[in-house]
Image (cartoon, rainbow, N blue to C red; front, side, top):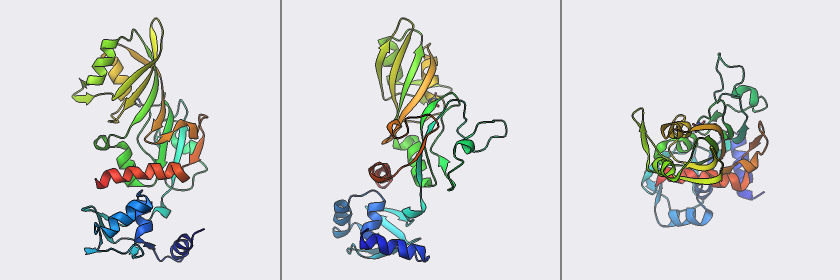
Length: 260
Ligand code: URA
């Protein structure tokens, strides 16, 4: 363990929330080199004062400005990140008095008050990220940030090039613009197709609605990734895994979208 990490853990353990500026930028997803570059080029200020010293102590609740964007300092140590392979038959809410199978049942062993980053329909399976990091949930789910969600869909009905072009151009359904960023045919049968679909807006039932609009029906839907988090982390339905290491680094890099 690095001396810096040891100091941070000790200070936090004693209820004194302090972290070095460089380390804090790294927690926000910047590489060490980028963090130094931002600091030394005078693009970071704390409580309105420009700080050009990577070892400067930053406290929780202080106001930090990076590249002209201001935010309040909040330490990562308090956040946890999980990925669940949501099985069929479960709703994506933590509590629903009308449903027997909720996320609560799948998260029995998770102590932290995590929430899902978006929803998957009851019959849809695959990657669901769970965290208590509200900023990240907002980035993962808001249409504004266009974080990719990749699905494998089995679609009934004839799938031709015109239909695929139409959903790539976008449609208006119930007053809402729905569009898919990319679609690839993985398998084409007589009256069905297996497709890989990339979505970026995150609207309710968006894949099913797109295909319904062009006269087809999604009969199976599985999300294989959300941002950098891939189903290979949790290959079995119902499996949950803490996101750590290089996966977490990639996930937290998304937070930079907010400061751009
Ligand atoms: N699109 C849908 O239609 N359903 C989901 O659960 C996710 C995307």
